[in-house]
Length: 114
Length: 111
Image 1 (cartoon, each protein chain N blue to C red):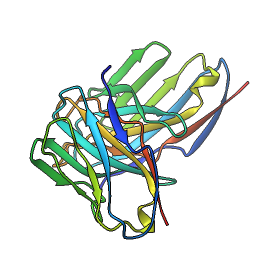
Image 2: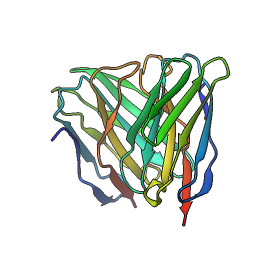
Image 3: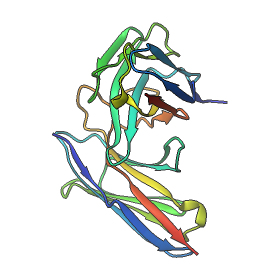
């Protein structure tokens, strides 16, 4: 089944404890992206990758890192999480970047930082 | 900057028709998407418009006017399962080549 998977789905952690949220897609998509979704703010892009070893900042990159060593995986790294990073996170992928390319979203990761 | 506006919440009756509007001001335009998102779940693709006019897909239709920076999503024969948030998103064709999302319209369907 074509899908985007994320792990973990739920995570409660404490301030400063490094964590990684994994994202994997099995559709051979070139473009991958991370979003966070907060009440009243909608979905905001954190980082994106147009292909292997190519990543760039989105609208809200502060406090996050990503890597794209393989086409299928795009992990999101929080080196020192803070409470303002409590949010619902979505990974998404599309065949290519640009017009008309539907993005497929993972199931989401609900992160709470205490 | 990018700005996408849509109503926060709408209520409609089962079996009726509802229109959800979206206006946008973006630095560029490379197409407009509508996504549906049930509470706590991932957004799922509904429609894509890049040229002016109406795109129909079953009970759902989407309209675009590029000159007015305006789109709407039309849902017909509403069902209870259509209760969800509807997200308008614009591909502005910038460096990110990703999507700028509106804050979403929470649609409540009443019996």
